[in-house]
Amino acid sequence: MTNDYKQLLYLPLGGSGEIGMNLNLYSYDNQWVMLDCGISFADDYLPGIDLIMPDVEFVDGIKDDLLGLVLTHAHEDHIGAVVHLWPRFQCPIFATPFTAKILKSKFTEAGLLGEVTINEIPLGGRFKLGDFDLEYVTLTHSIPEPNAVNIKTPLGTIFHTGDWKIDPDPLVGEATNCKRLKEIGDEGVLAIVCDSTNVFNKKPSGSELEVRENLIELVKEKKGAVLCTTFSSNVARVATLGAVAKETDRHLCLVGRSMQRNVAAAKECGYLKDLPPIMHEEDAAHIPRHKILYVMTGCQGEARAALMRVVLDNHRHIHITKKDTVVFSSKVIPGNERSIYRAYNFIAEKGAEIISEKDAKVHVSGHPGQDELKQMYEWIRPEIVVPTHGENVHLLKQAQFAESLGYKKTIVPKNGFVIKLAPGPASVINEVHHGRLALDGSMLVENDDIGIVERRRIMYNGALIIHLALNDDGSLLAPVEITALGIPNDADKGLINFIDDKIHEALDIASRKHLQDDDVLKEIVRATARKASKRYSGKETGPVTKVTLNRIN
Image (cartoon, rainbow, N blue to C red):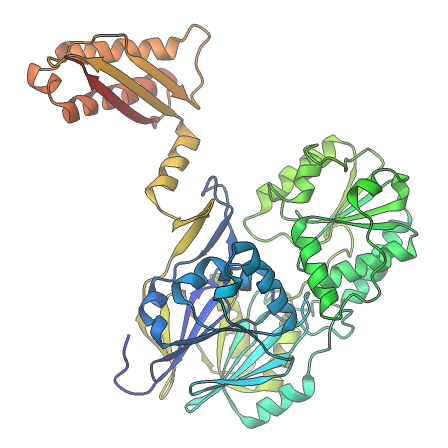
């Protein structure tokens, strides 16, 4: 993409029209800066896929002009795709210390640490990338070192909030730098690009201190083990649960690799100084159950996370009994309802008590409600409000909310929209390729890759594999081999026999010319078998059907 004249552009490739998978690009005079590069979690529509991330085909075309990747904080929906996508654009990375440590551990696991340049910027630090003058501004969230990025350019200043809320009593990290926010507003801001996740909440999100006090009272009453699941990156919640363990005379046990990694990084950066000693899982199995507080990953019902391994009795040292309590100290991310309720049902079968944010104050969001949005607008006083990080309904709601407060210039982005912020009125001037990539094992493929589409079809309709051995004239030299996968079959193999009969009938009436043409013959057998399966089963759609044949002289 080239500009006829110098323009200030904003281009989201992820996170606008969805929650998660944040990736934002800013451009001035054909220089580009990327903010965040995150993942989202796949649902049942992508069987066998755990993670999805933005398609960066557009970035491939501008990578020579990409000055750097600037990370706002260490949540997976903001940094989770970096290790997977960075090899495609290979630009320098900039992050504050905690985020840098988390990222370095990811690159180390991937064997790429020696190839990447990660620049560690102090809290409140400033740095320049070409004509971009960038400044980290401390906010509060549910993880150490959440930052807004104040971006000064020759055509105006953009204030990119990242994830944030206003917490009057943050338990980990520094409080929101209100003084600096007011100063930025006084200096003049062209546009605020702002988190929309909690825009439907009229009240402030609340303080982590409330959660700590409530969890202490709740855990005091429990007679068995307490298993608390939360986001592994919610270091503030881990600090809270450490205090809960102290106050209720329980041992703290962290379960889950990512949980342990984040806590280790937080300690290296000087956080979690008051965390009590952490007991190993194997040792925790040998103390009275009313003396243990497990903190584990899996609050979204993820199949491979610690909680699901425990509820499915696949964990070596941890199990659930009737006297135990499982606390979901998290919110339900839209799209994860089915997997979470699946976990609920497994826990209920074991007779344990389940407590979620609907039952008690065991979670507080890290995103701003309307009161907090209003306060941020008053500090920053932007000319233009650009909602981001939310589904379409969230983005539209924030635009409407801003307009109700007198901010007349709003523009609602979509992934792939190229938005000109200056000079002149803000407007959408182009749309570029965007999409999703799926991580299939170690391979990155488009989420509509034929392999995934076929896998989904097999999941719903099953599969047939048919093998024929024939001579050159098309006469069968052996019985037809039919393998049914994922298709219910009678004890007497009624389905297989029915399909076999129909294939023989089709071969009997096929012309000599068709019997001698491999491609035509495969299609005759494929269509016949699929139609027979649909007729026998009564389903409207047939199984995925593959035919192989061998010609034997």
